Amino acid sequence: MAHPHGTYADFEGLRKQAVALRRAGLSRRQIRDRLHVDNNDILNRLLQGEPAPEWTKRPNAKDDLRDRARGLRLRGWTYDQIQTELGCSKSSISLWVRDLPKPERKRSSEEAAAIAKRGWEAALQSREEERRRTKAAAKEAVGDLSDREVFLAGVVLYWAEGAKDKPYSRRERLQFINSDPNVIRLFLRWLDLLEVERERLTLRVSIHESANVAAAERFWADVAGVDVTSFSGATLKKHNPRTARKNTGEAYRGCLMIYVRQSAELYRRMEGAWYGIVGGATRQPD
Image (tube, rainbow, N blue to C red):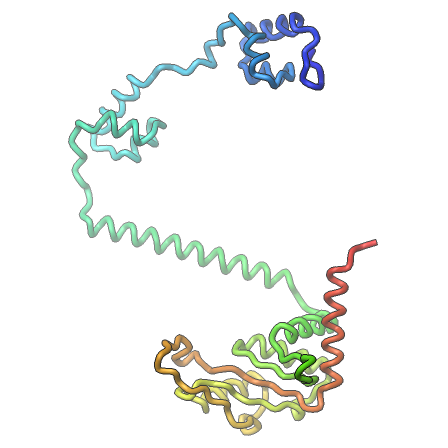
């Protein structure tokens, strides 16, 4: 038997086993695995003089494949169809049938392009449906959130998007700006959890000067659940003629800026909770 460390103490005995297995019809791989012989030189010596079983020999069928490929080509088959039928490479098919006339095109270029377009559109639709299914399943998996989960989500959201205190610029107040209505809704839900009344909020739209400011203010007032008259004057961004703006059209409503007055204590709670989240998430278990 094979030594566990790769040496073979009883070579002749091992050879007898290898020859017996070979004559029983096993392949080299099967014998190697059966006897645990990983060295090809040793395996060659063990099987020296023993012919391979017939079933392991590759049939020399190229002449037959060539004749079949030529016959299919004469019937108007494409390379892809011949490859699928015969299982051989396109390079071989090309070599075998290159002297034969090309099959007559069955479709016009316009028809082929239309078919390709329909196939691409179907693929895009399939991808979009898969996107929707994945997103819907992920949304369903979240379910309802507890107040604690909303609080933690709000802390992470603020730390990612809100204004933060700096050693060189003390800003211990909650100040938030974003262009995504859902982000604004979550931030306001977090403020509700912290028992911040809407009267303590200063709301202001930040938007490009060429946009419909009044429409944007009405939109954000609806998102925030406040009267549009409570908004402070909008912050207008001047147009730079050298840049091409992409945020145009009716869907562009700028950003909503939210300031929480008298919020130094809330800011400190938020920052402390943030570092608590970091510590809790990165702490190694005992």
